[in-house]
Length: 214
Image (cartoon, rainbow, N blue to C red):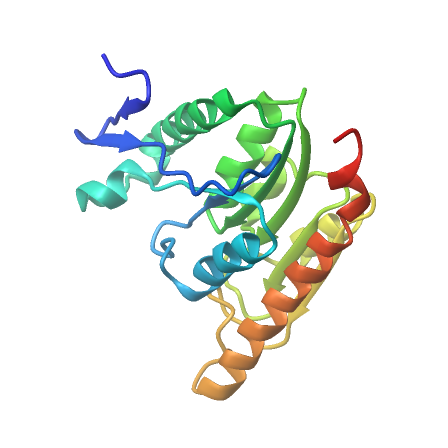
């Protein structure tokens, strides 16, 4: 059995498809259900991480590769297990610092991975977390970006997230769950720029954390 391949519940093989640049920091990208890695927010997050010189691990879910629908209630556990398996393979390179960037249901996977790897130094960017994400835990000193018209998170959840120590919450006015503005293409493109600029600022502000003990 190849110890660098995860055999998925969905009947396919998952590989650890890392992009390496000889960095001591690993950026892990976790997509949503329908919002895959090639969609703008995650694709440009990946490009930004590479531009800043980090190694990148984009994680694809088994059901996405297999072209299957997800039974979220019964199958989310398999996404978490398989993502953890891929992450562990990547960590064979002995990274000490990890930055998670997650989208939608990926924020739940993100939270579960954080809970399992407490020995690592971790920073976090959550894109459009959903109500359930809060139940799994959102880390301190994180960047959270959400839309005011996102039906998957309510005002009460956003209010609770804002109480977490040192979190930075950016709310995109009229942004939906993809952070698009309905019937306004140019404004949606401007939002994409705003999100990536916010990520860049957050990552640049981590410079002292990144260089510590290097």
